[in-house]
Image (cartoon, rainbow, N blue to C red; front, side, top):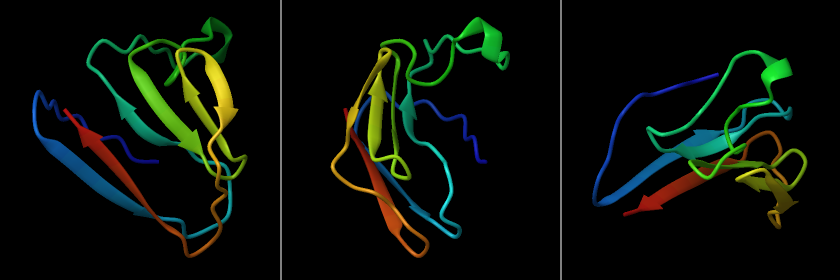
Length: 87
């Protein structure tokens, strides 16, 4: 896993991730207001509130504010995924 703490207030920001192994993983963005816990019993994590957005291409799902829906794609080993933020 990878976590980078940087705060952006304007502009366009982009990163890419290469899928090395076909497995469950999450890619996305969050604001500094994200309420998160490392305890699963609490139920707070990335996409559980309105301060974060993510996709899981292994399941073909997108997540935001507790909502789960289809994202229209699945990833596999060798895919390169781009994630763009336009403020």
